[in-house]
Length: 516
Image (cartoon, rainbow, N blue to C red; front, side, top):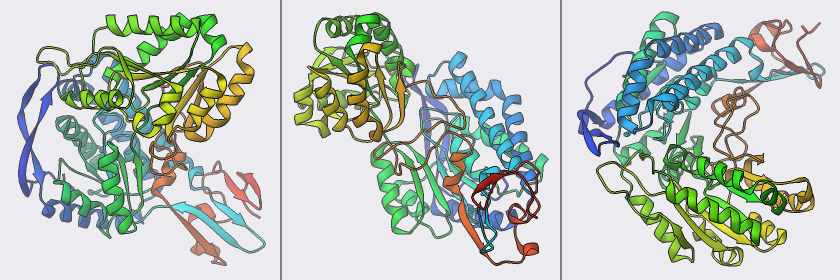
């Protein structure tokens, strides 16, 4: 979908999606675009950016609301296609994901109408005024495979944030669910027609060759890039984008450590084991917040937890993976090579279905600390490493050795207060979101949420992929006006509050008042 119309791709090849539940190709091919398609999309994106300069914010908000309505109207086809392409259950998983997607779009629309996200800032003494504004260039969004709707390049969180900031989007579909993306794009076309935004506000390409992807993100016509996916792929794109001065926001990988303190295990160890099993195997473990590391004290309470967790992992049925599972075996082999002992699972599930056994490994804290980098290899599936620690001091040392993560959690009891303080002091700087007494796979789509963290969880610790309005700032530029006449200023910086409810930072105070 380029330049406001469906067109025959200037393709160099084609590909098919796979049905993971049946282990077979789906009988429909999609194009691998040449650079001719990329060039056309970039040119149209630049034109759309220029047109957007004159589009009122309310029109962009109308598009976001209309798009959410169009997705809801086509819910059945989108969900059924996503099920075929990913193996994820239609209900409740994909239906809930679609509801989250439309909610994100509507949250973005409300933020655009309110306008407070622009953080209009005025210093009356110097007559210097500033606000966040569009990049005036298109944003490229790469969607991941594990959230075919809520993080889809043409509909998900990065998309909503980029559009809310006033930018056109060029989406690169994930090859795992091209049909799902096609139907979402059709809904976007419908919303574009009903709301009056530029025809090229939303464009998408199914797939490009690897070398063309690097050229794509490093083009001078690109305003910014959003990417969710593998560390290797993301860093290759980052190197190309950085070399051209293009901002790129990455979500890469995370093992999401969970620390279980002694008092918590004594009080409710079996319940915590059940929570852990449910979290680690949810969606076949293919959540970016999957608890891949659990630090467990040595001793009887810890032993009971490990035994119960092993029973649950050994007895539970493995869920269907998004794609072929060979890489999981490779990841488990790396952990074993560096000293981890296999407790449960570790192999492929027999049959055509793409599945890997629910897997637990174990290692001692001193062994982990001796080889911490290699042992933090992310195994993206129903796999977790148990680290046995002799003391809170060893737990704190493990926390201090962790790389950056999206999340980190601590289960505690009132008797654990001293141990909690010790572990949290080293864990807090290494995670974007700190949890207490809950597993990390639940993620509330609310303004206060941080779905980010230090590298390698993301490419920058100061930004989030979830949580409007904060997520919008990734795709905005800070515009400053020094002694500019009021009638020449954008509406949020003029003396009169343009909405009456927009929060502005005036002379050091937040206010919704007009300036006198």
